[in-house]
Length: 290
Ligand SMILES: Cc1cc2nc3c(=O)[nH]c(=O)nc-3n(C[C@H](O)[C@H](O)[C@H](O)COP(=O)(O)OP(=O)(O)OC[C@H]3O[C@@H](n4cnc5c(N)ncnc54)[C@H](O)[C@@H]3O)c2cc1C
Image 1 (tube, protein in one colour):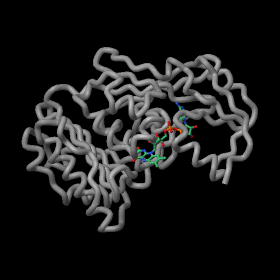
Image 2 (cartoon, rainbow, N blue to C red; image 1 turned 45 degrees about the vertical axis):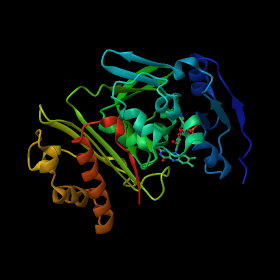
Image 3 (tube, helix red, strand yellow; image 1 turned 90 degrees about the vertical axis):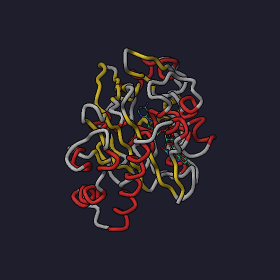
Image 4 (cartoon, rainbow, N blue to C red; image 1 turned 120 degrees about the vertical axis):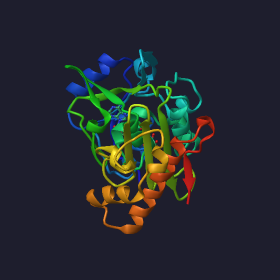
């Protein structure tokens, strides 16, 4: 199948893009890497009147460090991150997540902004950046605002974008020394979308932790009071204290009724916890095939 006819424009600056987004008649779709939008157009799941290609806008390709925050423009590609063409405040954690997304041609074109807005529950940035405590920066002709990523992703393929609004950047806090990080995805074949994702960011010294379970057919699950997965408190011995039954209970409470599904998710989460407790982060694999 081929797309229904649509008009195509490629604005050269953000102000022009936001004006077109605010003023255009009919349905408008932004196109970044086109890796998800392309198939949706071909299958006629979307039939926009106008496609605005956002890849020619320099601001959206920019990456910068602002204090202890990494700001990645929406059109930074997975390959830019994998190859280290953008700064890194995570000790290589972002590059390892990027390298496990699909295969190289997809990573060459697919963007961090497109991935977050598409909000596929099995997508890697959605879960990993929620665990890292990222925010998104949104812009419209009328102004800008920021939202924590877990508030932005409201469900499977559903985000809190207002009409005329777009995502311009992801703001990712530094992984400070002493913070443990683990990210494991499970997929049938390396390079495929995940069937289960576990992401953990643990501060053993302060007792704080963020645990996220992804690829669950809805927005990633941020475990409230993460300490309950570790016998009530998070400390330097967090990996030994990880309680799979508590994790299973969290998934039950979230409505996951299939015991096999819960077992797979708990196993992957346990591997992410074990990975976080290990040194030598640069050698850690992210993707595990079945
Ligand atoms: C074969 C294949 C395998 C894949 N495997 C994985 C995988 O393992 N893990 C993974 O995470 N992803 C995977 N992907 C998805 C890939 O990572 C894409 O990057 C992602 O789906 C969308 O990014 P994009 O830049 O191509 O966005 P596009 O396809 O251009 O856009 C996607 C959607 O977001 C909107 N949009 C794009 N940018 C913005 C913006 N800045 N503001 C507002 N709206 C915007 C578009 O209008 C559209 O609705 C896979 C894709 C393919 C084709």
